[in-house]
Image 1: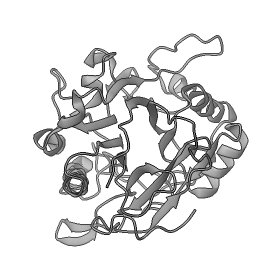
Image 2: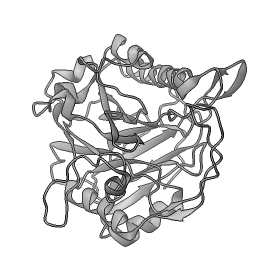
Image 3: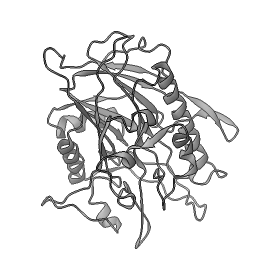
Length: 355
């Protein structure tokens, strides 16, 4: 890894920056025609480090401290099974619990196929990280935006609960002025736990995070004259479906109104909206809430251009390879790798542009 402050000086990071150099330089071998990108909230990858007292939204009372615990080995193995089977070129992971946890996971479970990509964010307990395949024939330029500030409830603070990370895909060994083939903004927005008593469900804070994300995306679009595909993906922490009867939440309106569309609406293999849930919430026994809070957005210019190939929401399987049903109890949900389902996006790579 090498610190890479020179790349895209007109697009400075709001935090650290890295260049992840390809271990497989292109010679006479043609680059892959498609790229597989995964977003996956892995629900405390290996160890839950414990948490603060949390306020019950219905009663206003603080619940007990959440203790530290280790994730069951079979659940960690299922996370690895999903990644090994999907074999993405790049996977953006939420709730990794830090660099060491991610590195140990890769070393133990992923057959030495991957390298980690990590910049510490604003929450060391449920951080964002990524892994990239070792045969990936491109460099990654990674910009953190953890230090972006804004006003929330009368105070200036860092807006992103974890981080917003921009992953620029560039030809291996490219000079600093090289135009990227693709820009991916990876995020993990604020949860629906209340941050401030006048912001139930943290809706206002999440909306500010969406606006800040859109600002970064627009700067990228302007810098490269809308010629570079920009993806926004990760855990949005509220339902992002626009199609009735779900109807997008107001906090995501800026994305739709500024030319971004949800890729799962556009994919040639798109599932029915009601089947596109990526998160299972069990507020009380016998009650299940299914929502699509994970996924990818792409700008209109690339929505119908042949850039998108497929969007797949991956379902967990049992030991016999049979797809598991919806877990209608905590006991069943805890048998899955996570309370989230991963989303795998396949895109067609554009040809490198001459500067």
